[in-house]
Image (cartoon, rainbow, N blue to C red; front, side, top):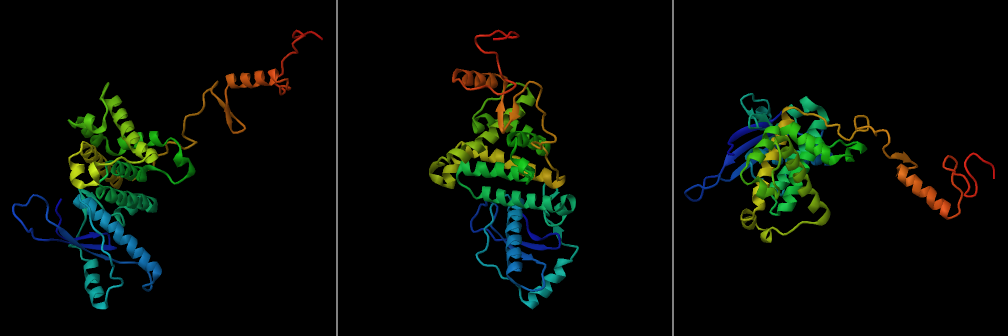
Length: 331
């Protein structure tokens, strides 16, 4: 993806894309691009708080630019903050210039500071920012397992609530949310000729089952290295990664996570899977919760039997007749 000229992210960030001329011919890859970023930080004076806000905005803008370009962006080692008065006067004019267009990808606005916050509020802005930054980190990875974790985590950043019940039914929430956010991308992944080799699984059954199996397999590939550590990726080099079968997996996951983020930017939404008020209610006869532990009918029977063999009294409600008497008759 090639971008040149001025772009904006609401009235808070101005971006100037400048492509550097290629050094050799023919041009096999997109030429290097330098991006000049100007952020407008609210605050009376330049101080420690304003500097932290400016740094966070620049990091977010870099991640958004990387998403728009489709390649990693290097952050500057130093940030010139605040700018001089002469520079501030010139960019203040451009800040309200209606001829400067917004930054978009596939026809969807990438403006997390303006458009997304208007649609979904502060919560959507924080979710979108986290997803952009996570995807940016995934682009820079050379280890397939680490990149897989980050691509899945970018989607989870969009769908996981901050409440304590957000830790419940995480796999089910992921499976349902991916289909809600980017169903065409899931079908495109299933139609990929190398999807079975990339994810090491076989497609079985109809379309619904294949969708379910693929999303579950993606989450499993994220969970394994999260708990068991990562494996080497051909020496950890970019050339080794491109020559590995895992590169196909990362290409599909990149498309899937990008489609999920674009779907969220178009229509921010919340996913209530795992919420105690909307979760499935226990059926009659299912294990009940007693004193913080699940106790089923067979478990209660074994507890009573163990107490009886040990000669210990059985609690009221579970008491049986003495061994030398019959029920209903005196001893």
